Length: 392
Image (cartoon, rainbow, N blue to C red; front, top):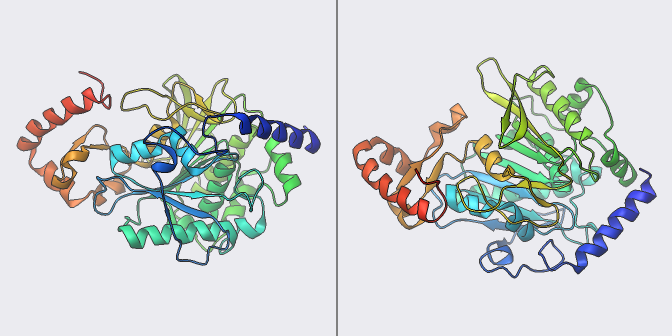
């Protein structure tokens, strides 16, 4: 697709979205309990060279030394709209997570996209990348974030910016999830960005890996990565997912051939594991899905979010499965009893080193197995009634 055709297509999409009432970033959400009302804006104490807004969500049941998930919205969206659609604050309530949701400003990018392709915003110590890094540091200081449990995810331009952050500040993150995004170093100008969005630039695994190795002084270990893309995406070609896999298999010293493949909620999943069986990379290609974040809406422990432009019902909740991949979806918390440290384990952690950082309250509750059975039964009944657990 030619550059002029791509620009015209985006312009047409922008005009359509302006007319929509659904909160996609063109206006404030009206749905009670979601959107702008759920997120709080914080004043960033750093220099903020990228001039981004700092929005956060902290659930009432936030434990000591919580995990932090950084969530980056896509173009034509706001942080609040993406939270509504992808359901991250719902997961934060459920699992006791802190959220940081940086927001682009129209004065920086006319389509409200993060500037993942501009060197002045995508290099370590510069622009938007530095602003996001400063926000993470502030969250660590203000809320006692566990430094070994910081993760990042994003859609489209937010997915490409996720690649930027994983490359330029790899020591900060335990893992990342790139949805409909691009590999780090795919473009350095606006024209190059549109070109690689339409068709990925094919490079060797080593070339892609070197771009990340040259982006910071870090020499490993590297974050684990989850890659999501729709097979029918006409905005960012699915071929970019293959190049992302090349980049991260090279960094982790893994073969391009997956270790295993399975079907999750009807969607093909491939995984790459190390010699100890630890899953370091996973990839989902959502058959027939266009450009957006895959959702499974409705009630239940694996469902959250709301359908809208770039937020697509696919029968699988990428947010839930990403949280599970990060190892932060292993405990459902009861908000009313959070001050007593009461929790109910629904899933086993798939990341060995994360279990060592369980909060003192959780450790105490786990050690008192006899008492936990009775309490757990009551919590399970309440969660089932609320639609957060499936009935036995």
